[in-house]
Length: 91
Image (cartoon, rainbow, N blue to C red; front, side, top):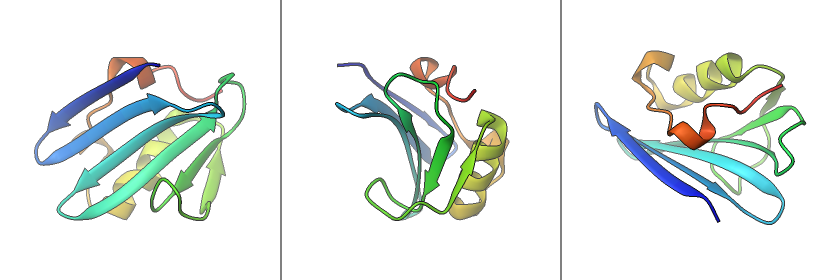
């Protein structure tokens, strides 16, 4: 199982894989956001307020999903560290 963590400017990003999804989870100042994609890596990205939360939106592009996740955290997309293993998420 791949797992990788990155931190920058008070934001922690954790990437990991489950049996069904690739997950990129963010936490900053008590707020959370998650981006998930099927484990095969070809489906749209799902943005959730938490890993287990209800899907808020789907995106084809990683940049748009990061933008939404940053909004949930009250940050800008450039504030979000992305672990190397998650850099290829999106279609």
